[in-house]
Image (tube, rainbow, N blue to C red; front, side):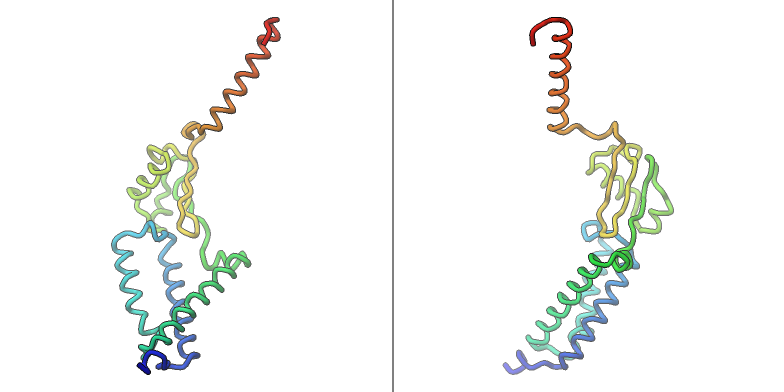
Length: 189
């Protein structure tokens, strides 16, 4: 029972371990690329699972206490909170942490060097484009991978579907035109 509450290593030791592991993993993920969690392939998922197990002992050290685990989790959340707020408040830190957007396709054509650099397969991107309303890359003006892993797809103007508000606005304009034509032809509106 005493093992539940007695720290196996000092608080400072646990704090340093947690911060170093957090920064190392964040740097590795930044180097690996921008693909978001939703875009992980099976191999990426396996690496993430194994990585969490590999670094567990690096964070908690020879400490199996409940308090040690709680301290480790609190440190992870606190460090992440600081990094996220710094990245949001200081643009240069945000760019360093997250990187810049990468254009994957422009004017209806993929950019092969950008796909290679980001590790995004053209087949995967084709599926994402279809989910966003394009039949193929030729229907797009711009496809950009954002720093957080989101995919921005800007369709060519003629490929953008009208929404209910667009149709309502067009109907109102036509009614105004009809009224003006009726007025010009001397018919009551």
